[in-house]
Length: 456
Image (cartoon, rainbow, N blue to C red):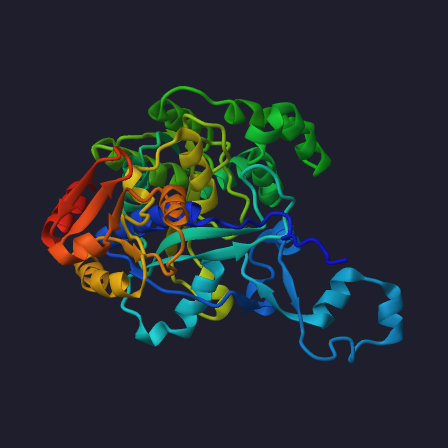
C-alpha cells in the first residue's frame, strides 16, 4: 500500500492564489527597500556550523537544523562515542553544515568575505527562507521567509530612524495598523549594573523578553531560578511595569540609570531616535518598551519589534543595532543595524484582516476557447496581440467540449472568454463573453483588447 504523502510539521505548501499574495508582500517590501537605497544580495541556504554556532545564544544553537555529512558520516566515530549517545558531541562529528537560522549572521559572513568589493556604508536587503527547529504553533513555523535590510559601516543613529520609517511605510502600504516598540540594549545593561547583577544581563533580558507571553509572575520566577537575588528582582519591578509617555519613561529611567555610564548612553541614543521620529510624520505609534529585550546576543544598541494592532499575532518585524558582529569573522569594529520583516506572519495578518488588494491575485484575464485546428490557427495572432498588450491570456490547449472549457474559466475566475467558430472566421471577428455579466459582443481584435483592458 502506497504511503500517504505528507510534509514536515511547521512547513506549508502554497497554492497559486497564496503565492500571488506572498509575491504582493515581497514586492511591496522590495519596492520600499529600493526607495531607501538598499541593494539585494542572496546567500546559500546552508552555512558551515562554524559560521552559525555561538551567534544566537544557547537557545538559538539548539534550534539550528544540522545537515549530515555526505558519505560515511560515522566513519571517524569510535564505538565508545556511539555507545555514549551524547547527541551534541555526535552532531559535532556527523555535521559540518547547517541550514541558516536567520539572514543577519550569513550577511556578516558575506561582508567579511567581500569586504574589498563593498562601498561603505553598505545597504543591503535580502529576501530568502530560514529554518529553525522550533515547536510549530500558530504564527510560528520551522521554515519561513525573512525580508531583511541592514546598513553596515555607519554609526549614525539616522540609520535607526530610516529603518523605523521603512517599517511605517511598508505597513501603511499594507493597510495594517502596527505598534513599533523600541528599546536599547545599553539601557538593559545599565539596569543590570544598577541592580547589582551585571553578570546576569543575558538571563535578565531573556526573562524580560517573555513578559508578554508568560506574565510578570512567571518572569520573576525565571529570574529567581537563574540565581538573581530577591533584592535585585524587587528593584526590577518598577522598571518592568513602567508606564506613561515615551518622554515620561525616559525621564524615569534616566534618573534610575544616572550611575551607569552604559545606561546613560542608551538613554541618550533612544531619546535622539524618538525625538527625530516625532517630526517624521509616521502613521503608526512608536512606543518605548523597557521589557523589550530581543533574545539574540548580538544586539548592542537600539532594538525594535513590531506588532499588529488589530489581530493577535506575535512579532511581525524586529531588529536592532549590532556593533561588532563581523568581529567574530576577523573584521572587528564594523557597526551595523538592521530589521527583518516576518513574511509568514504578515501573510497571516493580511489574511486575517482581508487586506489584499484585488489586483494582488493576478490571474488570467482572457481565455480563448479551442474549437479545433483551424479555429486555433485563426485565434493565434489575436492571442499574441493580447499578450503583447499586457493582457494575461490563455488558449485552451485541447479541443474538448465547450462546457469543460467554460468550467475551466469559471474555476480560475477568468473574467473574459473568446469564442471563434466558422461564422466569426468568415467575418474576421470574435465573440467576447463577459463571464461576470454573461453579456456577449461581436468584436474586432482591437476592440477585444480595449474592452478587456477597460475591465481591469
